[in-house]
Length: 602
Image (cartoon, rainbow, N blue to C red):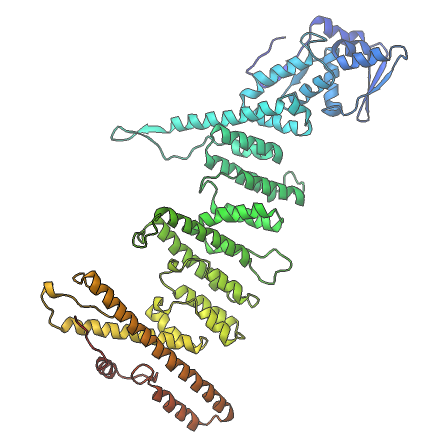
């Protein structure tokens, strides 16, 4: 027989000795019946015994009983493959193809059709086709591997599966290397570099989606060991997940619930460790599937950890994960997002430990460093997420606060977004107690509010009274500082060598000695503490007065009482001048404020 390696099919043609068997036994009654999975074959002992060691043993062991019927149990490949083996025994021609070579290898082992019983037997022919034709082609190797799904574990024992897997991995790696070399080109300066054109060598990605999950897992593992690019592996994993979880093939129903869970858990276990090897949107899609299919806790935690490591490129739609639990009363899964934030914060803490091993607080990355930029992006994302989930009436205050506190304090440079989210929450949860309102408003650093947000907060009736007073106090400090700076600019400046003054913000001149700096800071610290103590006392008085006024308002709603209330408030003189929120002319306010300012120089 001539074997042409360049052809995908091999036609088995026998010598004249075996071709004559077909004509010899055509008119001879059969003397043995073979049954395979309920299908019977009326055959003759001689051609079968001459090729099959197993049938020879069965016939020889039952020579005295003159056996005429044999049932072959668990025959690999079923009746269709046995028919091909019988044709081979009778000398009929048929083709070996990628769709039947694995079955022929297995049935030749089962029937013992080896060289020990006949030269050029079926086993050696099928193995030769597998080695010299199938394993030289990636696409054919995938097809044969798919055929092995119903031939396990025999196909594994015969090394068919390992050989196909190794061939697929090696061919994919070689194609990527060849593609990389083809992309090399010289620049205008004469240097060799890689062109940015998209690589087209990963055509095998779609072919692998036909494999069963256990064999696919072994192929991807082999590819990792061979050095296939993580991006290609990640793309293959996402393509496989899309085909197995979201699509129907040939009108058949999707795989069962348990099988889908196995697919998700296996894919998560195969994800490359390299960052950005898998798009973040795909990771969120896998996380939603894992939650819906109730995958293992380890699977979900792994996805949350991976998402947390690149949360700075996530979008608001990514974080809006529906709640799949039956016992949950909220629209979105807040607990999962909180765990993702914890992973991100832990990553930031670990990076900070590596960058500052001595614990120095003076050496840190600037605002444009990657870590600071990531923190800024995530803080905006979290504030938008809080504003999106705040209208949910079933959202507990503890969960809202946990999300808001999920980031380190230095992550938010501006608190406008957080204030907006808290305002939406207070509007949707009007039944909150004063204590809960104070608790949630403690999240806001009113010094980090923009002038517009501060003006809104000062008139926001949903905020507790203490927060409103704090906003007004901060606005007064800002006004004092602005007026002080403007007045300071009009004063005749001393010579450069005598410059040694400080301003209300606490910034010290470089001309002062360290000892003077320390003493000045201590003095200003004491002044701030006294100012805060006076503010607390005034605030307590105001709250007591507010309670009394509220009781009186319940008894009487006359305008006369409102007038007395205004007079009592004005008597408190909370900020050193009239605290009435009625509008006054800018010139009068300037004069009143200027009279309270003093320039301190040293």
